[in-house]
Image 1 (cartoon, rainbow, N blue to C red):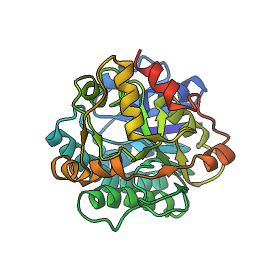
Image 2: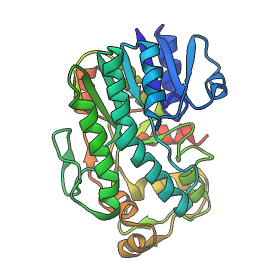
Image 3: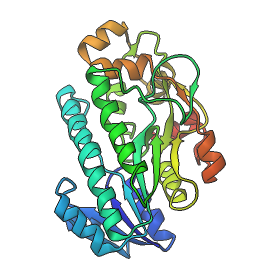
Image 4: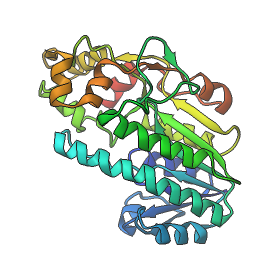
Length: 310
């Protein structure tokens, strides 16, 4: 089938485009630079040059590609853990979620596509005990920094799922690890762990749902057909923050992380970071397994992170 990918040169985009092309799909990748698509080193991938925030350019590119499916993998996050860079990256990504997602859906309708598959996140559910499923609400009424993350995520999901004539699929990926991510050996978080600059916040009870980028890409390929709606894409084993930070420290042969109180993390790193480290709940992947027929190649993050750190 013909597949149009926005965000095809990012952490998920690279393995996703490789898997799509390897499966024989006709792939077009939206890019601001033809060279970036060339750097993928894949035959049969067509670049479509344009800025994701330029509605006319995006619409023209999608209509010209005549895709069956449009995939939205757009983010513009910081590449470092510098607090200022992180804030600016979150703001850029929030704008893409609010604006570019609507443009892509409208362009998909104009091009006669049948489906839009969009990247969302599983780490903005309301905190509290228990494991979250797709039926649970996002924390959109939190306000402040947390609301600034949740609001654009909710907007992206609404654009994707509510468009007339389009089958909408939202994939709420967990925290990504593997090449090109913060958890890669040269990534921002792994670097902070090696320098003992990533502390455990409070008791470190925030429960991460991890997923390797290759597994996230495979879930996206699985979503080209079949059921619609929202799917959590995480591995099988919840990961308390204290546990994964300590594991990374041991893998890199450095001393255990320091600890800071939650109030201090909130004051210095922000409410969202404090939520991730101390408050986010566990997430279930049962629906993706059952209805997409997806299984993570790395079902346990302990093994996956160990492999990614080599």
